Length: 358
Image (tube, rainbow, N blue to C red; front, top):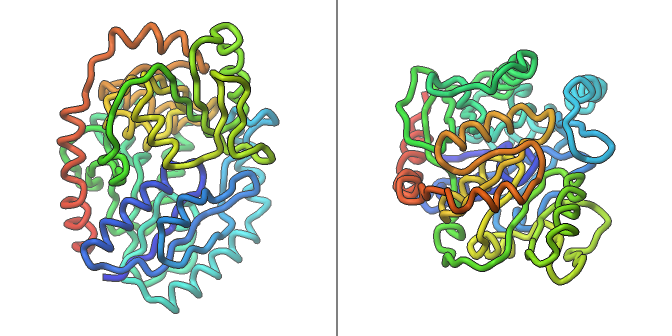
């Protein structure tokens, strides 16, 4: 079969999921003819993505979140307003996408939660089957517990799910745990890449930090000033800084580099991250205790943190407080074994679901 990917470029998770699924499909003698990645001015496509995807990659402007001036919190109303102002730009992206789809004629378009995909099916109603894939859809599962309050955020997320999943023939929701399907949702394991599965695990004395918004660096630096003897490695995507920015011997900031990130995760004693789905799964697979800090205003990450906490991954906080992770480590109960068993079913379940789309 022939597949085309549409991938949300915000953060690292959807990109690594696309790499993993690309490898599964190619291994099973299917074709991924093109990969479309949503782009924005504040994000650059990491090199590891273009290094590992051998199909043609196209970057199209697509709807995205807007953060505050410090690069911390997501501004929902401003995001909606500014994206509406760019509607003409997004229509051009949809027209370009339509031209590409008609020329390559894929059997199935797999949408990794980019709103452009939903808008495309809304406006153009193309022939290929539409499969949507994301952890975000798990909020519709009866076992999911929503964060308390925040009715507007909850409503906005459900609307976002409807938009991203518009015209979908099948909805695949990634899950931390093996759970029963529903009439509208198919539960699938995380899409972990072989590098994660094959990486030797050890425990050294450093902590690993991943921040999707670079504004959180000041919280890490504050902890470092108070605890200068604890080694910390941080990954960010701040523009205009070197590949490796070494504050001193025990605090280093790295631009996104997949091999370096995986090696440092495999050897860390604890992981502190904004609450994206993918890297939490990677840490669970490696048996690392996790502190999750949902990006302020990013309701999806609040949902991720609650879901992951219920699955035994770790704990959550409103700020990057390594002290909390340090005190949690002695209490951590490792869920690595059942999580690995669930992940071992990934290839079989994805091939089964993607080659049988009605």
